[in-house]
Length: 80
Image (cartoon, rainbow, N blue to C red):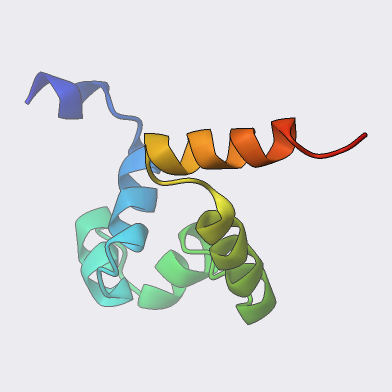
């Protein structure tokens, strides 16, 4: 519980968004009268092209040590 106490409100909100919590649930958590307040000021949706670019970037990042070593080996053996 101490970890949650140290979490900033913005980090918590981003965590809710990343977990695909519905906007209306976030509205109730923030105690807004209208969901338009929540979506207009607090919830920012990324455009499709931004999500696609981030997904491409994420897939290019090695997920394991063996992938990292393999990529480093291929870079080291390239002719300069």
